[in-house]
Length: 261
Image (cartoon, rainbow, N blue to C red; front, side):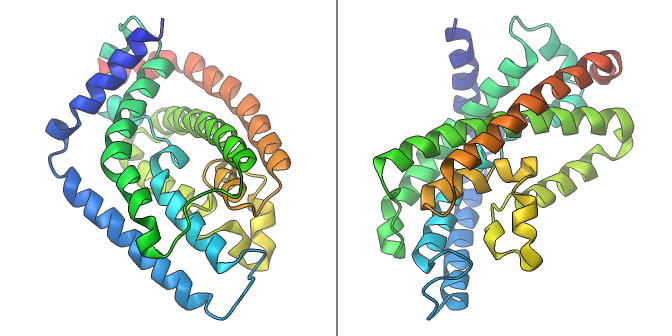
């Protein structure tokens, strides 16, 4: 049963070079982003043992692991672009469902980037002065569980935002995608840990679904958050968002599919 999903993922991974021959340049910019962020945190947190419950070492690990798992912490299926380019009708007649189909393609994209960027970044992390390992094996297990829930919440959000964007803001979906990406990076804690947000905003944002993506697994990995509470919030959002996603697509199926006509 899993074979068809694996073949879809493999085709996406092997076709990535042809689809995006400038991938190596993107890797260089991602690596430079890591270097800059690590340098900035070292300057900001110099001579501060603990800041907002996080040590400098924890923040550096948070930043590096956030880049290693960047695509898993901010999952995007490419569904919006398929709708915009009129490819959704073709996807609808495939022998596997939309969620499984676009998720498989997303995983194929991840495999390529993880092999050529994430693993090398992990290997050279000691040279960057960062300890990439989790606190314990238990924490590593809880991180993987949280990461799976993060992906579940993220994919559900992707389907929901795409459906709402195409139904109500069809002429500005590209702009919505750009704004959505920027807001997600900020509200999810992918760049700045939520603990560093002013006016205790981080405590409020922690209850939003965006925080159940990047912030949740990274807090668990660095040992700076309550893992069971965090996983519980993620599970709750996953249970809420998937039925909502299904309802939005079923309710607006005719209009959404018309973009592929």
